[in-house]
Image 1 (tube, helix red, strand yellow):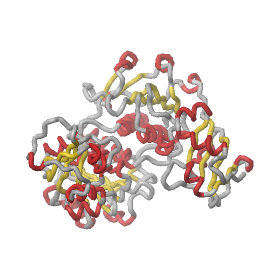
Image 2 (image 1 turned 135 degrees about the horizontal axis):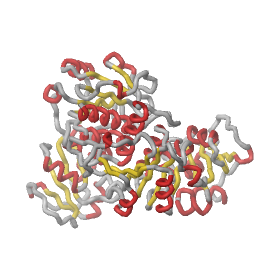
Image 3 (image 1 turned 90 degrees about the horizontal axis):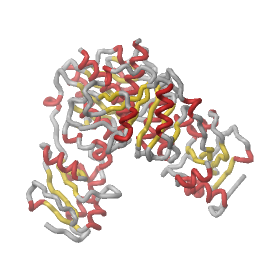
Length: 256
Length: 256
């Protein structure tokens, strides 16, 4: 299908997917770039349309009726990036069932009001690298399907479940029922991270960039540890903190 | 001093500091926000001017003749951020002597063509947290004094030396003379990072976001290791890789 006008209803709908509200109303989000589109094609995610600009020349293994070709200038208008990669996929927002995700012998991440999309995306990418079972977002974190989150996650959003949770109590109770210990980092904690057994059956909570972990979560937390910092910086970026916890967990699994 | 016109020569000069070329011609860069300006004031860096917008009301311990007050709309024009914090400092680019920085019993970072300013800034912030002695940039890395680097470094640029190096051979030879081992990460390395003794006397090279470490550096490298990844993500963000190396180095120092 070829569309040339930005007044086309479908194009107008796609352009709106930059807004969170429109994403959830339509149940759709978009990903850009060849690598990302290949990742969706390999995944169980359901693709509604693939949009290509007129000078995209590679083969795509997808239903031809739902490949939409648009002029370059129109592609630029719907793209979220400054230098568009000439291909994007319009994808259905998946639904996950908590009882199929939460189980023993796994590591989880809970992002508590993480607001910078680059940080959340990097956490998802790192979680995927260290085989985390799922990433949960709670308390007004940036939307998982924000284009900048998708971009920094580098395809990992299609490898592991990333799920926004409204009922925090239900999430925490399910984790506890599966014998998953819930830990957070705290600059003022007494013990270092490597003094904790975190090789498996753990969920790490990482908090907001400015405020840290929400005090309302304290009742769920089994332990707090600190990352040893001996220099002058007061704190670490939240995605850095997450990566160090995941590395330490991985290290403990491997040296067992 | 009060300046109200954006045609003022000083204001025109300050606006130009967004460009690398102009920064090095004038020998100046700028930092924004109260925390950053406080960090410069506490440091040995030399401040040329402090610019405040008319509704900035806090005390500043600085030569009154070099505090410049400008109207809000003019401050917005010279600021690099969308929501300016109403204070910025114009700072001299420092000069460092390699022989005062490179010594035994230290950890170093070499950023090799790291191009994303957020990545370099985060590496500097993390290096500061783990007491790295200095960060060197080589091979066309993003400029240290790029406003976005300064912003992600969160003041750490004023705590540890961050130095761009043109003569790579000199840098490497000085490191080797001080018995500093030079390591890099490699996805295809045989050994894991925790099998290397990296508690001290090490320099870590981190490469370009897409290409990795420049092969021209192979001759200087004493060893390559990998970070254990068991999931689906193909690689880690460069600032994440750096933080894991620095954490592992710190962990080895502390458990000794």
